[in-house]
Image (tube, rainbow, N blue to C red; front, side, top):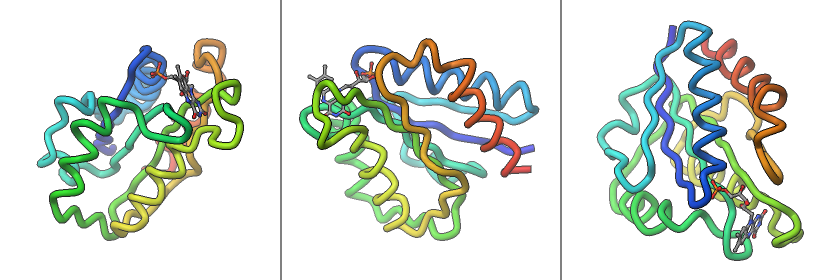
Length: 152
Ligand SMILES: Cc1cc2nc3c(=O)[nH]c(=O)nc-3n(C[C@H](O)[C@H](O)[C@H](O)COP(=O)(O)O)c2cc1C
């Protein structure tokens, strides 16, 4: 069984709900999950796991979430994070009513970063539009099951 570490940013709580559901499903499947908010994320923990998940909603016309940018994102660019062959996955949230041209752009930014650092994306990005609540038991659960099974 694997250890999955999740770093996430949230302003309104949706990404908290989604990453917590991912945690629940992975734990149901026997995995160990640690989850840290971006503003308190410990950079030393980014590689001490079997799979790293970065999760952020999209704000400000295709930007990452504010806490994520102001803390984690700034710090992570100062260290020489080498994710070569490290198993990685991305969760992005958005809503096309705010900006259809940059819908869930956060997922693209995070995937680009992880791949640039050599990370190996083991599943397609989980992309959640609008409220995640009706999608927790369907899309989010299915994605977490797929992620969990690709780790065993
Ligand atoms: C001011 C504002 C700007 C936003 N900009 C975008 C955007 O550019 N692209 C997008 O897909 N969603 C955008 N969204 C939607 C959020 O990403 C979405 O509501 C998300 O679920 C919020 O996650 P959180 O509750 O974890 O903060 C925006 C929302 C707000 C309030």
